[in-house]
Image (cartoon, rainbow, N blue to C red; front, side, top):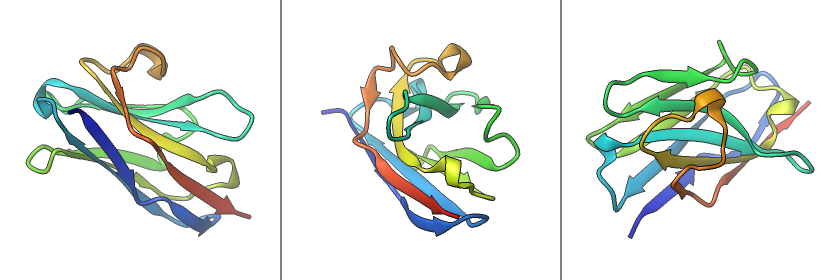
Length: 124
């Protein structure tokens, strides 16, 4: 059974940091790309970042470049999202998802597998 389990969300003040984790199981981790997506209340889901487990290529949305860093520990089948300099507009439910490739422009639809999400709240 494929499982993606996010953790690490919480409440943080603006300017603070959080590290999200996505633990994967049930598929060949090295063959997949793992992406982070987020959905704020009343807004469409959007892509945040993606990493290709095979070659380590990374991609970021413009809104998080320079503040967020995605990384992968293939030995643990886990992808991390280090989030620094958080802003209130980063408040959202963050999901990780898996597909064979990182999607163009980090579009969210078409990803094969999804986790249930973890809530990040950034207070001003």
